[in-house]
Length: 289
Length: 214
Image (spheres, rainbow over the protein chains, first blue to last red):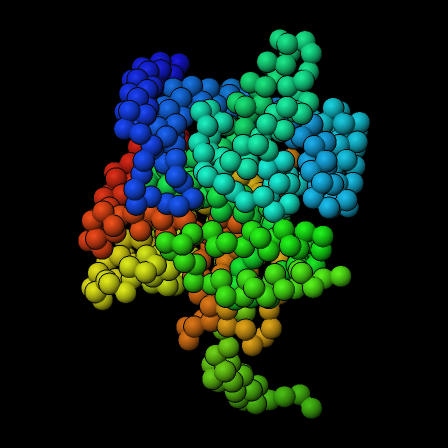
């Protein structure tokens, strides 16, 4: 208990600092000369990042830590599985939209199986049986269709995003079965429970991020952009110097879309030293029947 | 027909000489698998590490993992275009500081290990390749698997890792913007100072973290 009280006091101070930082940033305008071309809104984004950090310090981390300390892992796994199961529905939809009907069928089979035999999804028997879970959303679908990232944006509470992923997020949230659930009290409880569970699962990862980064804002931004690029390509973004892994798994229909996305992740300022063979991937995808 | 002990010994000696003279290093995928399983086995069974002894994890990384990494190549790649401006002495200091930071981060990741299972993917490479990617998948419950990819290069001393990609995030690429920013603000010396300060702060915090965890 004592720790959470201390956390609250420190959090309030941090929150005040964040609001002050936000005002300063807005007053100074968002101009950031010398900045990263992928991040024209850096001034605004840094202010939002500061706010999110303060919010996390004051509420996110303490609540997630308490959740992890109070609830034993088997129960947390039920919560995790329950929401992961609901998410499989629209992961399937997105796989279909990305031209991966087999993956979509796997997602829906997972949903059907886990909802029934897995008791409303609290058990993930489908994974045990070898039906692997996927990670898809509308932002990735648009990326697959060839929509570029657009500027990097940090939203309050929601965190890192891009223009494209923000539009995707509108669909993700608008169609979210949990947020459409009635009555409202049950819905709010579920939305909060899901968020707390997610934050609790990331406690270790966020501590490692904190340790690894010189400038946490830059580290998080670059990690987000790299991760999204990897997800859009299902773990195989174009990259040189090696045999092409699973290029045949990519749907030929999206070959041109994929080749549009080949701008090196590091941007013009710091060219990736291994981009030479990207052209060959584009050629191969484009020439696929 | 029973072989005499002397001839057996001679055969054994010949075999040893043959192995030593060929000096074919362990294939990269076998190396990654061996090291991963060995480290995980130690983390799982060591009581001190289970209790949150960070120094012991760092020691484990130093002895088992570090020999298979090419830190100079990692540092050069992360520093990018500024590497050419650095003197040999600065390069050595940069490598040393970056190495310390990476070892610590690696140790933290290992300490966060919770009974996940590993799946070692078959190597997609020709026997003549000298630059390969070894993929290890971490299978976890109710979440998609995390892919760990080790970019490795064949060196005279064996296969060495020059980048690690976690869920598609290249460690080296991720440091590039950070390093670039530091160099533009304070030159190469500024970057070395920033890294050293970061390492000192982590060193001070290590005891506190270990206490909080237990």
